[in-house]
Amino acid sequence: AQSVTQPDIHITVSEGASLELRCNYSYGATPYLFWYVQSPGQGLQLLLKYFSGDTLVQGIKGFEAEFKRSQSSFNLRKPSVHWSDAAEYFCAVAFLNFGNEKLTFGTGTRLTIIP
Amino acid sequence: GAVVSQHPSRVICKSGTSVKIECRSLDFQATTMFWYRQFPKQSLMLMATSNEGSKATYEQGVEKDKFLINHASLTLSTLTVTSAHPEDSSFYICSAPEGVSRVTQYFGPGTRLLVL
Image 1 (tube, rainbow over the protein chains, first blue to last red):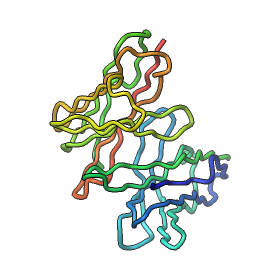
Image 2 (cartoon, helix red, strand yellow):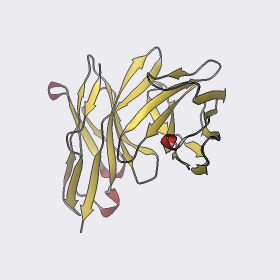
Image 3 (tube, rainbow over the protein chains, first blue to last red):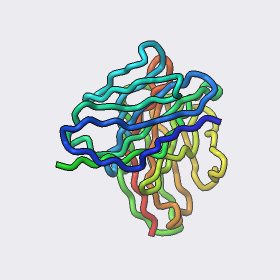
Image 4 (cartoon, chains in turn brown, green):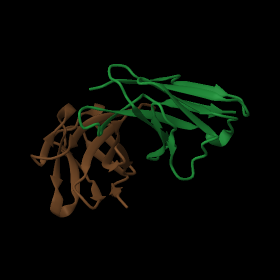
C-alpha cells in the first residue's frame, strides 16, 4: 500500500533562513506528488505539484520541491522564510482508483518561525 | 486555482441533533468530491468519496449511516452528521479535483464542528 512519511513533526527556523521539509513516499509506480500548506483553522492551499517532466518544480510563495526517484523523496525548500510561512505543511501522494484520484497525506510538519 | 467553499465555517450543536455541511465548487464542475476529517494536530483522514449521480464510497471504518453524503449537483456535495455526539467534534474538510487530469484537489476552508 502507498504511504507518505514526513519525518519531522516540528521544525523551527529563523526568519530569513533557508528551509527544507522532508517527504518520502512508498508507491509502486511514479506517483503524483503534492505539497499543501494549512494555516490554523483553515483549509489546505496547494503550494506545488509534480506529475512528470522537470524534477524541480516551482510553486507559489517562493517554494520549490525536487522529485528524486532514487530516494523516493519530494522535499520542499525555500531559500529565505518569512514569518508568514509559519503553518502546517502536508506532503501528499495521489494514486488512481477506478478513476477517482485519492490523496494519501503525510502526518504533516509544523513550521515555526522565530525572529 | 479553483475555488471550493464550505458552509458553515463553524457550528455548535447539541448531542443527538443532525448537522449538514455544504461543499461547493465555485468556478468548476466536480463529479467527484472528497470529505476528510482532521483531529487537532493530526493529518487529514479521508472519510468518503462523493459521486454525483451515484452513491458515495466510504472508507473502511466510516459509518455510512452516521455520515450521510449527497452529491446533489455538479457543484454541490453535502455531508450530514446524524445524531451527533461529542466524539464527532472535529474539523471537516472537503475537496474537489479539477483540471484535465482531475488529479489536483482543491480544498474548502473547512468546517469546525463542536457537539456539546
